[in-house]
Length: 345
Image (cartoon, rainbow, N blue to C red; front, side, top):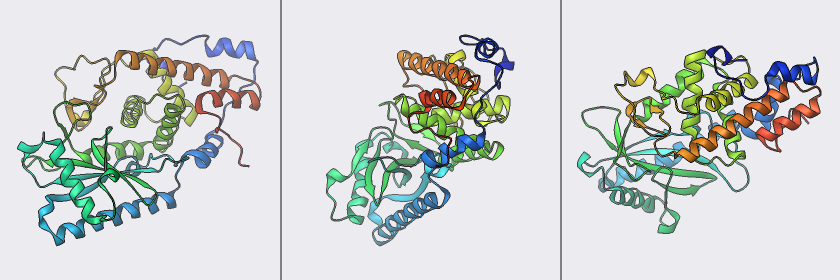
C-alpha cells in the first residue's frame, strides 16, 4: 500500500492478519467504481462548473462597470480564487450553494491594511451600488475569509479584501481570520501551486473532493479545505501519484494518523525555512513561509483529526480485505457517508 515504504507503524491489526482472518479473496473498489460516487454525489460537472464560473465573470464585469462609472470606489481589480477555480469544489447539497471566492484588490495604501472595517465598507459600498435593492444585512462578513458574503443566483459569493504590496507584484495583504496581523499572500501563486500538483496527478482533484466529503461527513469543521489540499500535495511531492483512489485515501489517512500532524510541512516554492513555529500543527503556505495556514488548530482539534484519520484508515483497509461487495460497501459508507455508492443505477 502507498506510504508503508516510509516505515510508518501500522495501525491496529495488519492487513496480512486481516487477510488470513477474512479469507483469501480481496475486495477492492476500482477507480471506475469510486468514480460512480464522485460523479453522482461530489463532482459538480464540467459544464456546471463552467456555468458558475461564467456567473462569477458576469458579476465581476458588473463590478468593473460600476468602478469605471465612478472612480471613488477605491477598487483596483478582482481575482477569481477558491475551490471553484482549483477544480475541487463539491456539488451543492440541500440549501448550500456553490462557494465562489473573489479577491478584491483595493486601491488603498499598505498603511491601511489593518483597517478591516474600512476595507469591508469599501466593498459594501460597491455592492450596494450594483445591487441597490439589497439591504446592508444581505452583505455579511464571512468569518472564515473575512470577506463580504452574499448570495447571488445560486452562488455563495465571498469578496475578500486584499491590499496590494507595491514592491512585490502579485502579493498583497489579506486580513487574518484569526484576529492577528494581516497575512501576506499571492493568490495566483496559490492557484499555480495547486495546478502543478493536479497536472502531475490526474487523481489529485478527485482525492481532494473525497477527503473533503470525509471531512464534512465526520464534522471536522476545523480541517480547512486548503489544509487538505496541502497535505495531499505534500504526499504527492514525497511519494508521487497514488496508484489508485483507494490507495490515495489510505495514504492520506495513514500519514495523518501516523505523523499525528506533528511533522512540519513546507514546500520548495516557499524556499528554505530557517525555523518553524511551535504551533500544534505546522503547514506553511507555499507562497509565504512565514504563514502557517494551520496556526489556529488547537491541540484537541489536532488529536480529533488524527483519531478520525486512524479510524478511516483502519476501516478502508478492513474493507479491502473483506469478502463480498456488500460488506465492503458498508465499510466505505462508514467513511464516506450513506450516499456512498459504486452502482450506476
